[in-house]
Length: 468
Ligand code: AMP
Image (cartoon, rainbow, N blue to C red; front, side, top):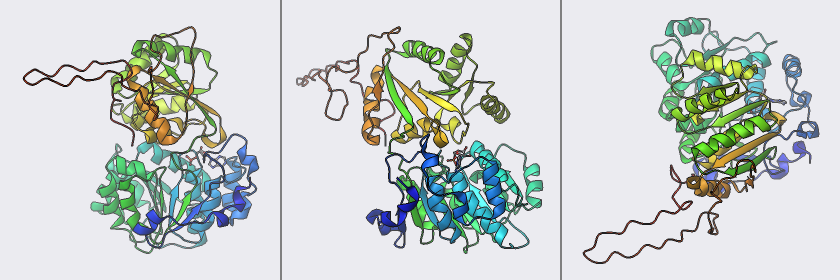
């Protein structure tokens, strides 16, 4: 299947989006199920970077980074961005989306002279890690271009950031909160801005940054190019679409689609103690380079890390309370292979782009389908194969069923015969795959108190509500 030959044939309109943004063209590049780049699929792409009208300096950098062929999102987005169009890109993390917006921006910045002062390109991202990663990728891609790249995030000293801004970097990668503070005090200026990127817009919205983002945009040059990237398009992100001018939508994959390079399994567990045993068994028996373990609370993350270290696993943890320098050191140790297992919460793992994560274990099931997609998307990145295993307790069955239905996937059942449990899943299932409740409530008789409903294993509602 040749990705490069499809786009013209796939051009279509979406009633939903045309209503909100009347001049939105849609380009759907989705010839196969699942937008992730499969292990063998880079070589399948007929296009090469040299076809993309990029400067030799950029081609040299791409070559040095070992990128052989552009990924689907790069093939589709780069030519449109080079034409100066505003873009709405639906591409998940791991699709190569960062280079898809950085390469055309770098191309534009080196091919024309900018104004003497002020930022020329601004990339707004939800988390510090993501800002740092994009900063690094930008430095690598632009290593022969002689452009200055600055990264601005919270948790750093203002005076250091003011000094950085005085050096007038052409490209700024930043988180919204701190950027707005610096804009308000006049340390930075976006009136000459040529390119604006809102990366992981769904996360920007979820983390409550929409107002800050809109306030920053209000100070930006109106004659700019804007690119908005988001794995999912919840209602809140649609509000941000108003900042796009007649955008073209590039849809590489939707978060609901299956990740073809990732094997998705579940193992039934009786309780947390049983889950701990299953977790250790998997870490001791699976062959993997790096593993990510997800849980839903900070205490659980630190506790599990302790349990794993006790069993000689090289484990670390990340959660919201971990200080920035410790967090950086942990991620570096994980990237360098000094740590093999990282326990994390959803928030703490945002923007984590570490190569060689080939095992993701959901100790606690994700609370929403989109979170599940983001979690398992940490593996199988850029062509690698991955395994995702969810440990499902009695109260998580319905959550698993909802996520499967939402994503239109069927997790493969797996049993560890050395660690059998008593929980075998619900006895009866509804058509939705959820547990069929068999206990019937008696109608309370007049004047008598309400009888307590019988609680049956596997029939409780899922914690945290149903996935969106
Ligand atoms: P992203 O989706 O931007 O987070 O990219 C995921 C990973 O894929 C990053 O480590 C990139 O450096 C890498 N990557 C991006 N484009 C390519 C490409 N064309 N070939 C191989 N790897 C790539």
